[in-house]
Length: 293
Image (cartoon, rainbow, N blue to C red; front, top):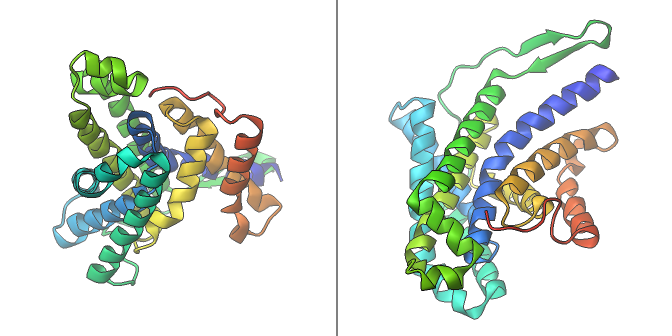
């Protein structure tokens, strides 16, 4: 039993590391533009397919394909926000959130129209699981691909924290997130910051979509399947807080895996709904509280 719990805990940590990247993107948009951008699902799918094209059709290594997933999803994010969501933002966050959800469905169906519904895979070697002996408690099985995906997530999170802390663009994003009125008085261009925030956030969504595709497969619903856990992670940690999004992602990842001890695996997605309900009821500002990035 101990070995089984430890195995589920490891699986949850690795899943949480993958979930943290798009969760950071979701909370970044909320912090800067103050609306939940559910179009993240469509951009995660676009990033996953961009990665497949780069890796399979063009023969790029996984690292370069991840970069392609980030850039393509980020550019589509800027374009879709400029053409669609920017026009809705003056009508309020609820209208913009509904428009974002509709945009995500449109993007998903564009992908479906171009690539079809058949799942696609990446051209990567299949590696045997690592086995770690725990003595009388049994052993652990750890997938090398999952470890590599978790390492990629940690690297991109570290780069993001450095970007926000040490670059002028990152500091401007934090200033707008903290106090948009004061930022405007200091001459910071809100439209420019919005474009940068969308590029970073949707790029992270695309990056995360490809990581998830590497672990499973890529189909038009890959983003739709992850948007609820991403939203739950952001709410759990505190909307607008990047450390909160990371903490929430790990808690959701572990929670989904732990739920399989008592529930059929098909019910694991309910963990996200339960987390949202509990947090909104008991601590509406999230575990770490809402804050600007």
